Image (tube, rainbow, N blue to C red):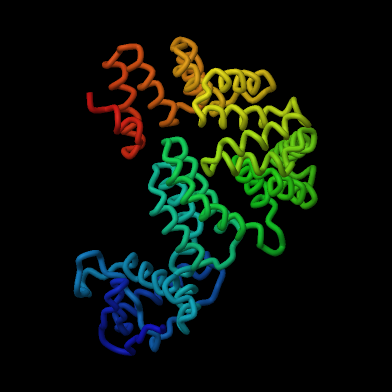
Length: 391
């Protein structure tokens, strides 16, 4: 529904705290002066249209606009809000040109701000900033990729905090964002490369293979040192997928079964896979994961040790192995594996919480409290730390 906009005076649009005002002479002079200053840098012509009202976003809790407090931030925020809420608004292209004239460096500034917010765990604000950029730069590949990367980072953070249900719920948003990246025409090589790693983490090796294969067909071998490193990474991954048949249907089905809580069916599928590919460490990891889910601790230890022997000694494997070792009573062995995992990922909340559980099993309440306190500082909703940090 198109928002009704006044051609004179001030009127509020309450759902998004937007007011529209006609361009008074004093403000018009400021805008024209600023636009002239920025035109050369922005390399674009822009003319103020006094017939088009200026949208202004009010601060939360503010009912009326005080013109003496009017700022550029309020005007630009209002224009961006109109572009986002109603991209088909007849004045949206004008507002877009206006913002880019006044803030020619907004792409760099907002991108850096979104990255910083994501690093600090404020994913909602990071996505809001990225949404503003998508409104200002429709279908820009780098902006669409940034949205996917932020969503992926949020899924990873939830997984590391042990919030698997929440991570699963957010996974669809990240997956759909990467599908947007893959739908770009012409194809976006950097997007394909990052999408390949996203699908690798989710053990969707079919899609990972397609992404890396297309990436190699598009990228140039001699571009930059970074490009050459990325090409080599893609080639190594494709070789591993091919050599161990990780795109095999039984592997994919096994992973899906165990993730859905159907571990017994998953074990049946992964054993079929391992009969054909006994040296695939990914297969042994899935086997150990399913065994751990069923409480078969000793068998899980054997599977995870085989995973490490075949080259899969990452933090996930060692964390899973440590859980099985704890349940088998090998507390010293569990600590070695958790400490090795923590060196690789020092802010992984799941590992820190497991060190707290291990300290409790060793009777060291003081050390346990320290681990749980650290976990809660990193992730206030960590379920393990919240459960145990009551003693």
